[in-house]
Image 1 (cartoon, rainbow, N blue to C red):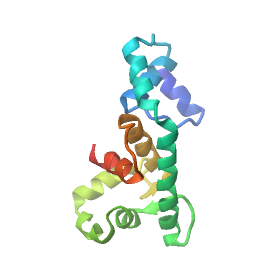
Image 2 (image 1 turned 30 degrees about the vertical axis):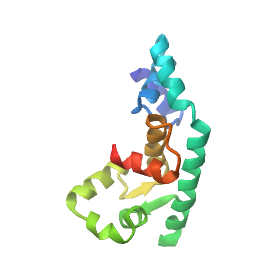
Image 3 (image 1 turned 135 degrees about the horizontal axis):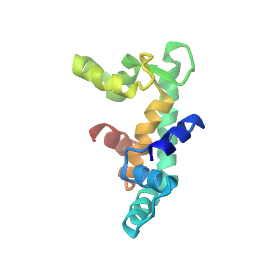
Length: 146
């Protein structure tokens, strides 16, 4: 499976391997035998994939509004803009060092900004882990609560 992850990375594919669905898909891609339990996991996690994609698109619309706050439409948010978008008027409560720690976890390329592709990764994970979410607010909540 490690070899498949490296192949995907070389091909520029940013896959999600953290959910039970993501790891099952990786297992299958790497030549593993799809058991009925694994197949059920994948089916359950992907049953609402189109709905989850729609929710992610709704989040992207909100993201784009905040993206231009720094006068550059580059699909990146500063930590402060991200916090203000997510927590609104309560964003000042989330400026403690431990909160910066989880922001740095979102910042996968360590450039001090949160890229859409980095954040989208968490939304895809949340959608696969919790395929029954109904709104983009629920999707965001799942992405941050687990």
